[in-house]
Amino acid sequence: MRISLPALLLGLGLATSALAQDKPEVSTVRLAVGGQAALYYLPLAVTQGLGLFRQQGVEVNISDFAGGSRALQALIGGSADVVAGAFDHTIQMQAKNQAVVAVVELGQFPGFVLALLNSKASSYHGPADLKGMRIGVTAPGSSTHFMALQLMTKAGLKADDASFVGVGATTTAVAAVKRGEIDAIVNSDPAVALLQRDGLIKIIADTRTRDGTRDIYGGIYPAAVIYTTPAFMEKNPRTVQALVNAFVRGLAWMQTHTPEEIAAVVPEDYALGDKPLYTQAIKNSLPMYSPDGRFTSEGADTALRVLKAFDPDVRSATIDLERTYTDRFVNRAQAAN
Image (cartoon, rainbow, N blue to C red):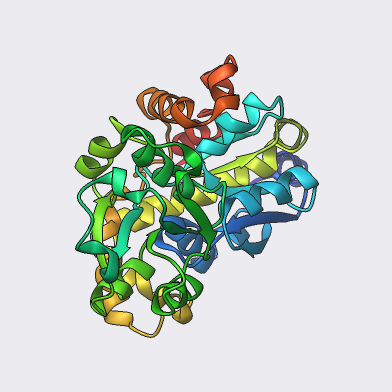
């Protein structure tokens, strides 16, 4: 069939117009994260490694901080546009009248481990024995800190009954254990896997499984998400949609590829010098990642209940959980696949 020149030009014009309408408002997005090499944030590394951001028309510049609380500060301070961080922060910031909104869920449960250094393990009988300990967390105010506080609160302890030391998420966390700077640690793989391999720790609480998460938190507990401010989301909806499209495709790719294939697309230094151990850690962690990026009301309810137990700001605030997350971008991304 022969197409006339006017019809061809009209078709090209409509296509160009459609592309312009879908084009992100900004070409570069500043993303803050606290401990990018931790398996907690593996979907970020995979999505970046596969080039999915660029496929969606955005360049993502990543700033890596020692912990999630530092990444949150970057967003509030204006040096980041979006954060890969814990869902907890969306609730805490609403309690402080500074709204942030999660737009895609990366982790269904946290994957954190609370472990004692071997020198402390023999005298430990339960969470009440955390009193007086120096507990290493990625950064004070981060979700690793919250896990320790949850266990302490359940045991009748107060937040200041232990001291918390920021040790980062990977090599710095391992070094803090080896130097004996802390008595216990809350962290994630691959650091935990490496410390286990070297026989340096004894695990006493584990959220790398759904059952372990329910045991500690009393329900499923959303972990890593991508969150931003309502102002950025409303000003740049196509940019946010492009980011979410990329993450949804990255999560789907992880569901259909082997741990070896996943390990191959992330930076080599994330393995901390032991690629086989890192690959095994990925295999063990795969159930914790969201298959589709969607949120659940049960997870949000659990997070709110847990935070109320030890965060006085959250306890005294009226929290509207429907303002802490939105599935609108994920639903569009899923519809387009």
